[in-house]
Image (cartoon, rainbow, N blue to C red; front, top):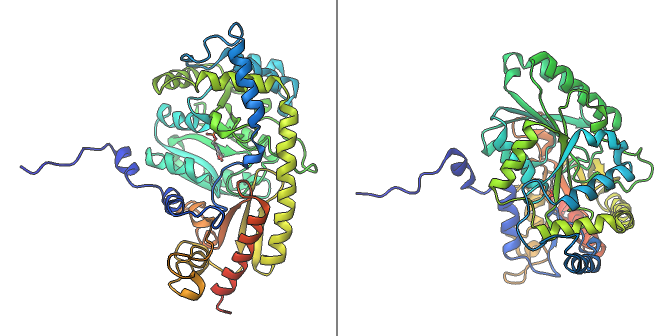
Length: 445
Ligand SMILES: Cc1ncc(COP(=O)(O)O)c(C=O)c1O
């Protein structure tokens, strides 16, 4: 009898095919040539922002003080290290991060994820029933792809220069009719990935207000999760200090997700969730236990030590680096691609620029993409087989906009460029190649 393949769940089936961005990045990484090809696609932080020495020092301190940092190489608990939770509390209160006070935190819990903010986002998908999730367009494609594989339906509302458009959201909610009951949560990235658009305080308050009213209307608390992955990376001093959405919460529906990935090191895998004490947070803690406990205890203790010793200086250093890069990259983009840039977001926070080109498509079948990945099939552009010209990768807008949303058409002319990982000379080189790719695409060569 013919034997069938392993029976997969719907989620298993959906996950057996890599997401388009994963496929793109894997293909590029397979034959990536160090010092030759340029990766403006990855969301990696800049290596030079990672405080290697301080991490080594913190590790020694933790191991040398077992009284404070108990059994740091043993299993951790499900909620996270007491030391780290205390350090995070202090970090938020003493620095008045977003106006957070002791009073605000006393009514809330902090829980540490198993593996960065990503694991907390993932846990949400197991604890809330499948249904509709509202977010901004362009969207954080990694999480939205995960949500859809888990059976959620993502509805993406275009953003303007203050973040998710509140007026459009109100209209959408009105038009949903009976489907209102299927709304499970709102997901808002405060410095959006891919655009780095900063959600203004005014807009943030408006969104909390909309979701509060909506919760009353449907007679059920609908959570709104703010993803603060890049909120410590606002490097433009003209931007108003960001307020925490927790300050606006009157119904216990606001949750904030943070990470130490961008200000310390992604490799520590420390992400945390702050929200009202209650059944939902309890379920997150149980879920963390189910998937192998909170992040490795040694990493949590190292992070705690670093938060207690000089974190402000570290954050400043990180931001000084990105500020300088943002300025230069912007000037180069203007000089090299200027004629064809119709829209540009980013440059004040995080490390992405999100461009809209006037007349050139950027999707993986486009001439622009083929030129930069050396797949035009023409030797003069690709270089000789075996020693091709430098390749450049970026994230095409088609992967960032929701495929059923309003931005599908414009998304075909958009791209995300990261100035995080690569150093300035490589970024300059990549932008020069993008200029040539535009010339090639519009047929002037
Ligand atoms: C919007 C957003 N959320 C979450 C994360 C993941 O954070 P972590 O490294 O803590 O898993 C990222 C990483 O790039 C991100 O861009």
